[in-house]
Image 1 (tube, rainbow, N blue to C red):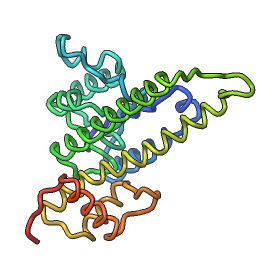
Image 2: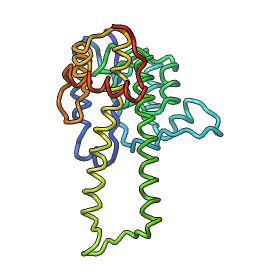
Image 3: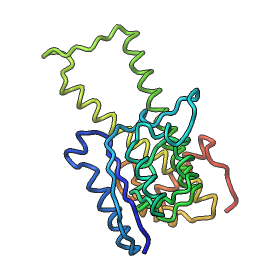
Image 4: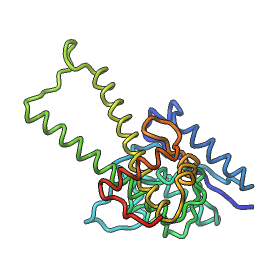
Length: 247
């Protein structure tokens, strides 16, 4: 019987307290281990903010310890897995990291990782998904800085008074930006994955089925259909993101 160590990561302390996201991760991972007749020998839940937490400075000496200096529980999970010959299982690759350098180190650490929502993912697919996620994080950061600079240049000052920009309105605005960023991120990831699958010979229906099975959703939050796949393919062609192939 294979031995598994489950690893969960929630993005904020608030999210951990309310169990938002955590329960979904646990349900998916525990069901996966049950389906493969595995044994869970330990479990780790890391509470940390995504985004800049995994950033690596190029002027620092790189080691797995330095890369995981802000992820102590993941480091502990790696050491336990190595000592027990166990597999680390997560819901999806992004729960490990959204940064390419760290993912590269993890995949070459000698530890076996499995992904409950995408068990057939190869190292290449994992790297592709991570690169897409990393690119979107960079674009979100650039757009945010540009927007703040534009407001500052126009003399905007945040007013938290009763008749100005209230904390409630600020929170609503942040929530809406996160929602839009999530949808945009979903389409970007889906587009890259569609390109890969199409170039490997998959039909539109096969691509739609694959996206749906791995939890991707359209910009309207619905399951993908061949027409959605074709739309993203055409959009990629128009922006020169896809190398045409004979069909």
